[in-house]
Image (cartoon, rainbow, N blue to C red; front, side, top):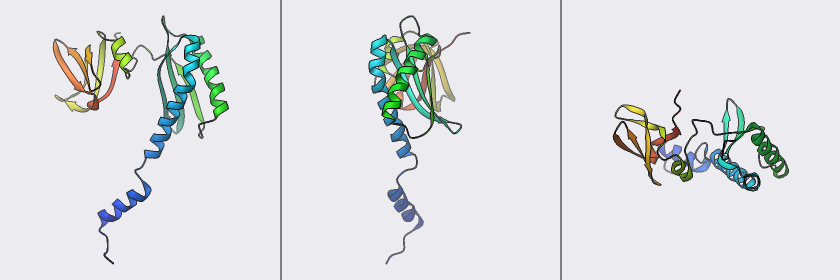
Amino acid sequence: MKERTKSEQRLTLLCVWGFPGRKEEKVKKDIVELTEKMLEPIMQKHRYELVDVEYLKENGQWYLRVYADKEGGITINDCEVISRELEEELDKADPIEEAYILEVSSPGLDRVLKKEKDFKRYMGYSVDVKLYKALEKKKEFTGELTGYTADTVTIDCDGREMVFDRSQIAQVRLTVFI
């Protein structure tokens, strides 16, 4: 019997155990998708817009975060309505094994742009683009959102058109001017 090298042993271990975090990422994705489905009738009933859902762990605590909006802006009472109705649905279905905190809020003035409707809605607004890796020795760029596709985001950065590949972008959010 041939003895395996260290790299062959590691490869075998990865094949048996899988890649670390992959199962957790799938569980998180499934919880987000299920929560979005549960929210659909609630949002329609009250004419709210679902901006985003996140399920993440911070400092050892799990959070299920719902970001909602409506024309004229969402109020704390609106967030309470969503929270109460969603909590009822989550308690019935009981899809989350871990203890978690449910948070419902507005996306904020510096809202993150993720979906096509976000980019369409905020075309012409000033945005901050954060990259995973530095480009021209910078990881952050601010400019007017002038275009987007499924693969790119374009901003006017002080008269210079900059096109970023979405795979390079860590985050795009509205600029807050103080």
